[in-house]
Image (cartoon, rainbow, N blue to C red; front, side):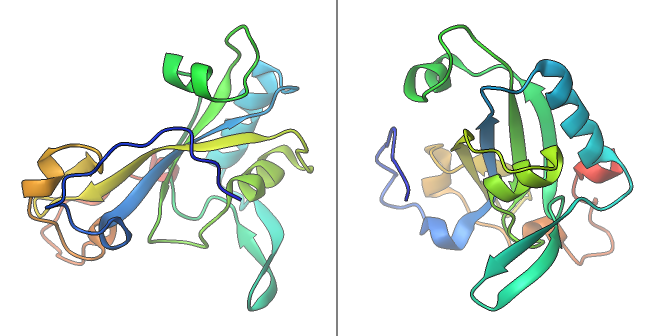
Length: 176
């Protein structure tokens, strides 16, 4: 289940999160992983070959590419707040910071991403969604906790995949 580590009141004028949340950022902490193993996982995600795992959903079992919807993946250090709120080692150790499009792809779960990138089950995975973003009418992403969201005009229902031929393409981790 979900464990809430922190919460803030959202401006009552803000639209429902379920309608505007388009991008999320997660941290994945693997206590036993060495920095080189984390870097290799990022390289595996950047490679041309699919990173496939078998998953079970309501519709049954299927194989997915865990890179679906991936916007960014990098080795990083926890923020002071993450270090304070999450069960991490006492000394700052590297983790993976994962940004994902919530609209596109197979809706990959953090444990599935870890299994695909490390090629094995990761029994001691610590994961948390650290940020959630909405898209404004001008295509800018804004943190859903930003007070500007309450007064802002929300963009189209699928802003990361704008079909306007004049629009700039969305940034993609895989095209970097």
